[in-house]
Length: 74
Image 1 (spheres, rainbow, N blue to C red):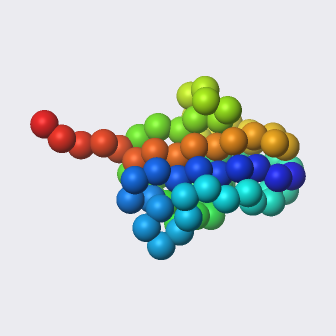
Image 2 (cartoon, rainbow, N blue to C red):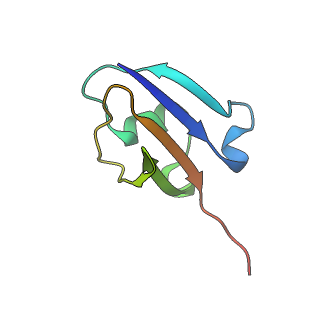
């Protein structure tokens, strides 16, 4: 299935900004994150089609997955 993956902030370094990728069914958000070499501890927000989701959420054909890092500051 084709899914659009969008990366934000430092997750783009050495990767991409947005890319359409192929995944087998079923695939979870966690599997996508792991496949990109992103540490789950560094993930702050996950969204599918502009709605918050969890690592356990299954992606579906045509979904748009956005992965944002934890934002620090003070």
